[in-house]
Image 1 (spheres, protein in one colour):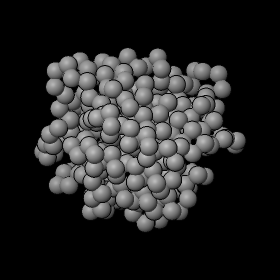
Image 2 (spheres, protein in one colour):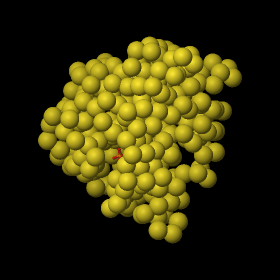
Image 3 (spheres, protein in one colour):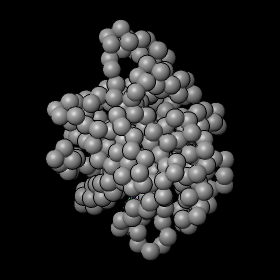
Amino acid sequence: MTLNASPNSLYLYEREGAYIPRVGAVHDLCGYGKCSLGVAIPVLSAAGCDVCPVPTGLFSAHTAFPKFYLYSTTPMLTPYLDAWVEEGVALDAVYSGFLGSPQDIEAIQRLYREHESALRVVDPVMGDGGKAYPTYTPELCEAMKELVTGADILTPNLTEVSILTGTEYQGQNVDEAFVREAADRLIDMGAKTVVIKGVERGDGLIRNYVGGAGLELTEVSGEKLPFMLHGTGDLFTSALLASVMTGHSLEDAVRFAGRFVHDCMKLSAEQPDYQLRGVSFESKLGDVTALLG
Ligand SMILES: Nc1ncnc2c1ncn2[C@@H]1O[C@H](COP(=O)(O)OP(=O)(O)O)[C@@H](O)[C@H]1O
Ligand SMILES: Cc1ncc(COP(=O)(O)O)c(C=O)c1O
């Protein structure tokens, strides 16, 4: 793994020949409603990665549905990871997302200790539209801050920026100075690079920003579709990591992920009951495999 500090060419992972990188994916698994492991496993697999799931909870459906059943897998995480140690599982990246309890953060930190050179990718999933998701307690939100320190790539939306930095949520329409200050705060808290998602200014575009210590803040924008779907945050970070793990720069990865989510959303809108079904990406996985060149 190499870190290239020159602006706009941040290559975080160098893929060597036919080597298949292994990604530990620490997220929940949802039976219905595409998100988390249901997205991370297929998307990263399509990019030629060996994805090893660490399920942080089993949901009947994601938390945007009025009724969902949650089975917490937190008690099994210690024996689960103990067995990985015995087996000698070696990871090239640790990618975390939706968590069930503060103990899940200890499991992630344990993976960091046991896989010291692994790329640390943290999608600090906690909420949207200024509100925390229903299963996110104040303790869990507080504990999530610990994952900012040492994250190679941190991908918050603006609600998550506000929770992590302890600043008021100002909506999605924020100017570049606001984003720069937010990125600087997260970098001061210990993140190496930050991708701030979902900035909207009412001009038909949706913007993502890439920042890092000593780097110019870079804007990557694309057409904003006139509807929202659940699971797009997970699809975005999974596609971003797929691009990084195939040897692309972080800026290119953000460009790819934004375009991929946009294209999958367009396809989703052609499906019956698409608002309920969530984001459909299955028939677009070839675009991810094409990253391999
Ligand atoms: N309506 C949309 N039109 C186009 N792209 C979108 C749309 N919604 C999301 N995306 C893309 O997916 C990214 C992540 O989605 P978002 O829903 O903002 O994440 P989160 O679930 O973390 O809030 C956005 O930053 C954008 O690039
Ligand atoms: C169980 C679960 N996992 C993951 C997510 C993340 O979804 P998104 O990709 O929209 O941030 C959610 C959001 O509601 C959820 O309820």
